[in-house]
Image 1: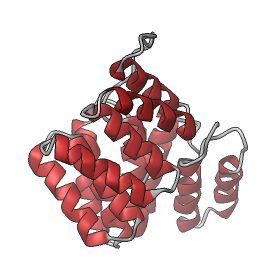
Image 2 (image 1 turned 30 degrees about the vertical axis):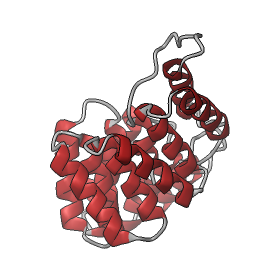
Image 3 (image 1 turned 180 degrees about the vertical axis):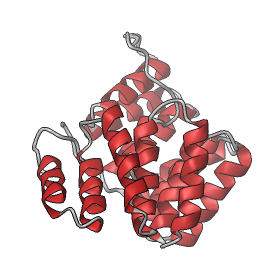
Image 4 (image 1 turned 30 degrees about the horizontal axis):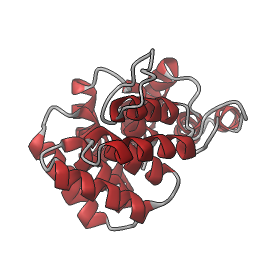
Length: 233
């Protein structure tokens, strides 16, 4: 769905990843590779973890995420459904399922998955953020802003992603000045995400600041920046 899900999924890999041939060590390697946008390599690591322990929840969630970002949405959905079989009350798995369903254009089912995640864990900020993104794609900009605000209140990492979500919703409401504030703050936190620069251009364009908008779009086109879904950036 979006990079926010990838960066805030299940667990944070250890900075000094274990080298043991265990499910946990392979899963940690997989998350490290996800953070580098190396989805094929991450998928291999998660599959290795699962071959060692077929009940390893974090590996199944990681596998689903890697598949989602590779565009293999049906397989991603299968991975998240498998996770839910193993751990039916894990909100992270329901968020992942919501992402895969959204990418399969199964909007109502996606929304139900996000609702389930929030019911299970109302403090899970990423669920609020990802539901906000789905709502704004449906044109429910006001509700999207409310969900993004809830995510911002709860979030203690990946704040730039949630600010970007809120900004896009505000653009949909025509609140370009407020949206611009969100994008500027997000860029201050994470200047390397091209998508946020592009969205900033949209806000500036809405304000009639065409030259500034083109400058923001030019930054977004910078080949050194990251676009969600790209590999080996």
